[in-house]
Amino acid sequence: MKLFLIFLGLAVAGLLGYKMEPALCHKVTGMAATHPTGRAAHPLESARTTLHPATLTPEQLPAKVMLKADVQVTDAASEVTLIIPTGNRVKLDRIEGANAVVSPGTGSYSGRLPIAQTDLMEQLAAAQQPAAMPTPTPEAQPPAVARVPATAPESPTVATQPAPAMTEPAMTEPPEPAPPPAEQAAPVPTAAPAAAATDPTAVIQIMQESIRTRQINEFALTQVLAWQGESDETVNGEVFQAGSLTYKAETIFGVKTIQAKALIKDGKVQRWIWPKSGLEIK
Image (cartoon, rainbow, N blue to C red):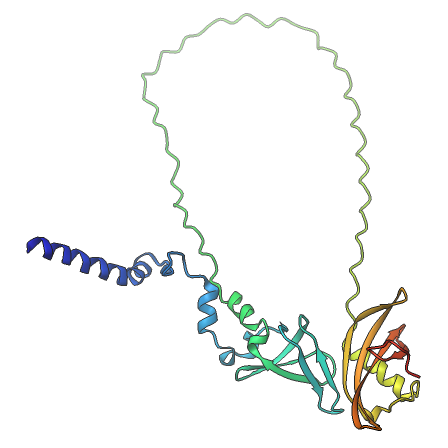
């Protein structure tokens, strides 16, 4: 019976130690408790679960976020719609509940998408990581002073030194001139940074100007429903900036939604084509 009670007491003590060890470890040593799997809890994990962007001030939010999904932004004045694809960095205007209000940074375009479809939480988690504590160094100890044992002073003795013989001064050669300093190598010019990608709003403005000047008669500016800037395309070995639009047109089958693509170079639409066939639109 006594042996059973001893084992029971050891089991209870072990359970209490397992439950209370993280709190006692943090209180005594100042170190964070370890993860249940045995590894230390990562700062990003706690920041992801406790941080709420809606409670932060605008100064605590990052200026830009990266998109994890396409977002549609609209110009309130002209009602022109623009789609910004995944992977682009956009300006973070504000937080509305669980949504982030973003804009391309130019013009009066604005749109919203869920916070989870941006890297906002990752940036906030990285900003919340505690700075590394400096390792305390022992205080400098004063240098030890060696003690010299005292000895009885010896009686001074006077020794008769012979007079120094007269010697002629040695002839010294003049020092050699110092070698001229080596020529410094000319600095190697660094390559200029690559030009930034074209702003989607600039592509849309070029397409609007082309339609406004009647470069194409297939549709008018009032028929356009949506605009979108696209990546560069190579046609017959020539690189063009690309943009597309969607417009409505009256056909024999009724009102249809049709797409058209513009190939742009030197700030001007070179030609309009049908996206699927690649044929030029007259």
